[in-house]
Image 1 (tube, rainbow, N blue to C red):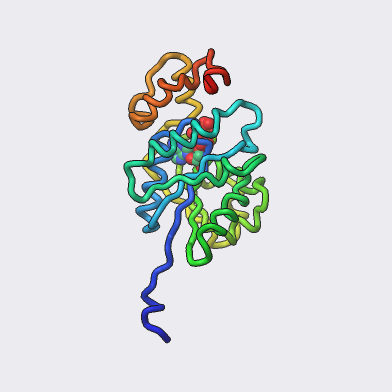
Image 2: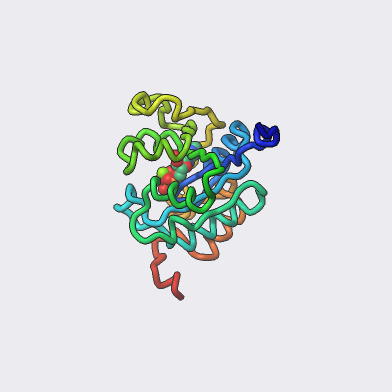
Length: 215
Ligand code: ATP
Ligand code: MG
């Protein structure tokens, strides 16, 4: 046996998927807490293309959501952003996200998929359910208003999921969008750069249309 082989630690990559419309401190705290607890080398944030669960409402342009995610994560040396989902045509499924990242990063990486309690309770409905748990270890974090222990969590493959309590932040992207539309502040719910980006681009205001994106 080569002793160096035993010492070499596998790279540990957290994956935080989301619409990030906009990214807020709930996302950032969840990623930071999981990174600390699981000793992750990196957390990659992956803004969705067209999320299949959100077909009912118009989601902001992918480039706006991508740039907000870059702005919000720029100050953390372990946080990165991937374009795999926004560059893939069609609806976004987590199994495709994990397959693409696996192809990019190779086999010497352990994946930890981070998800809030609300998304976790839908997990049995996700496409490629069995394969998901071969691609990544799942980490479910607490979120105010959602129960981490409700079914179908008991039906998941043994050892494939860790539940973790994180400091409760009752912040949602929906709440942030509603506040902007109502002219209420979002300071301290999202990073300062995100407040400014939203104002600069005129996002979430009722009169906002595609035309203001293209000029
Ligand atoms: P929306 O209201 O548009 O659904 P959201 O706030 O739920 O937005 P998403 O982009 O849908 O944000 O969430 C991405 C991931 O982050 C999901 O796994 C979600 O459960 C998790 N998450 C979002 N907000 C929090 C929070 N405050 N605490 C813990 N996890 C969160
Ligand atoms: Mg959500």
